[in-house]
Each structure stands twice: as C-alpha cells, then as structure tokens.
Length: 329
Image 1 (cartoon, rainbow, N blue to C red):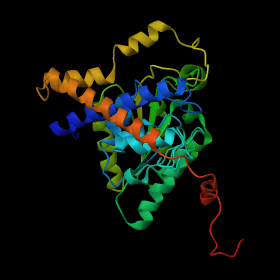
Image 2 (image 1 turned 135 degrees about the vertical axis):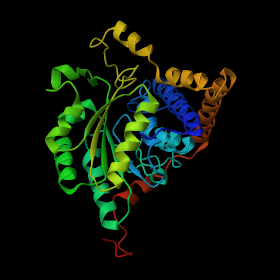
Image 3 (image 1 turned 90 degrees about the vertical axis):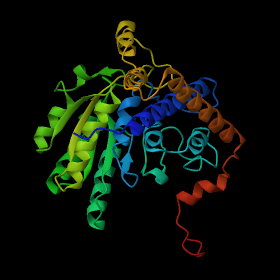
Image 4 (image 1 turned 180 degrees about the vertical axis):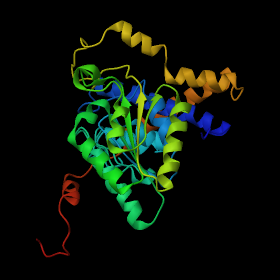
C-alpha cells in the first residue's frame, strides 16, 4: 500500500490547518453577517479531504458538495480567491457569483460544488468519461456525504461507472448525519461502502480522522483506476464538530454533548501532529509554526477579499447568455 513520504506528511498538516483556519474564519464572518447565506464548515473532517486530495495528481479533478471549502484547499487552491468568493467579490474564483456552496477552481481541478445533494456525483462520472475519450489517465474523485448515498444520482452513477470501468473514485465523507438525520434512521446498511458490492467494485471503509490512512486507501484506488480497472467506493468515517450550517439557527437536539466530545478527542489535526512528533519529522515549535502560518495566510486572504471590488451587476449575464457575435439575439 502506498505510504506518503516525510515531506508529504508535513504538507498534510499544513493543508489541514489551512482548511481549519479558513473554516473557523468563515464561521466568524457568517455570524458577523459579512458572509451572506449558509456556511457549512468542514471542521473535524480535515483528514478526509486532505488525505484524499493529496493522493491525487495535479491534473486529476474533483467534484464536491455544499460542505466544500476544504476540497479545493486540500487540492492546493489559493485562499485569497476562495475567501473573495465567500464575500461575493469580483476576484473570487467564480467572480463572486457562486458563494460558499458553489465554488469551482479549475486551476486545481475543482470542477464545481453544489448545494444540491448528490449532484456532483454524476458530474464526476462525466469527467471520468472525458478522461477516457481524451486518452489520458486522469481520474476524478467525487466527494459527498452519507445522505447523498440514498439519492438516485449515487446509484445511477456507480452503476454507469462500473459498467464502463471509468476512472472515478466515489468518496463518502460519512459524518453520521444528513443535516439532522442520523445514518441509522435513514440508511439500510451500517457502512455505505457495503453498497459497492451491488456494482462489483471495491468498497473500503477507512478512519476518516487519520489522514495517512485516507491517503493510503485513496492512492491504492487511484492506481487501480489509472490501470483501467474501474471505480471504487471509499467511505471515511469522520465527524463535523459544528452544526450542519452555521448561522442558520439549526437546533442541536439531534446529538448530545458527550458524542461531540468523544469525537473531539480524535481531532485529526492533533492525531497527525502527534504522528509528526513521534517520527521526529517536526518538533513542537515547528508544529506550532505551521498553525501560525496557516492563520496568517487566512488573515491575508481576508484582507485581499475585503479590498476587492464588488462585481458589476451586468457581469451576471456573462455566464447566462452566449455572445452570438453581436447579432443581439
């Protein structure tokens, strides 16, 4: 099984801190009403997205969902344009027209993220088909939550990808809840990965709080896909520490404080920090410096976003109508 090199292990911690610091600031900005609309933080789930994305190549692609600030960051996005997008500025990755739930950063292969549950899964199948038609060995990874595994798009996509042996990784970030509905109340299987058997593809469950474990199973599935052996279904057991959507007044009655605290004891950043210390790849000062640098980067990103211009209202039509060459139609 592929094992990350020492420099990659350090970079994992850096990217997890970039995700954590970005989302913490996004939550603050939402409560201060500087960000309009819901914010779905990935705080607690950083090892899943970082471990998976770091097992990909630069030219591989991904699709996400509404909880998707972490995916482009994990793939290497610059924070300034991402923060500008959250603030609706013209310098945002989508020109300020996408916002928190609809990020797309083609510079790192992020094809788009959407608030429609499960909608990114068939897009990833299309990206896999595109790679096949173009004759490349690129792969696409589709990130989705456990709730999306009960949608028709999930089953249709797995079926088609399996039939055509497309280079797609279906990656379920199972945090136990579809908004406020627990997995046990809405899903017929204990592990979403069990559903892979119905489509004759590998189904793998991994500890989603362990970035190295996630990296290893993703790298193995990626190698299989590049070799023409088809898709895999990966399920990372993880947990979100905050609410489904911050600032939206969703009551927390559906889970108790003891459950949240149990998962906080398995903070992915602390688990990976300890691994780096145990392997003598960093000392405590070096680990602390990574956090400080990530927070400083977020501060700079926010300054960039605040200084950026608002988009011109007419720009909204640039992505709705095609310019037919001046005919006026």
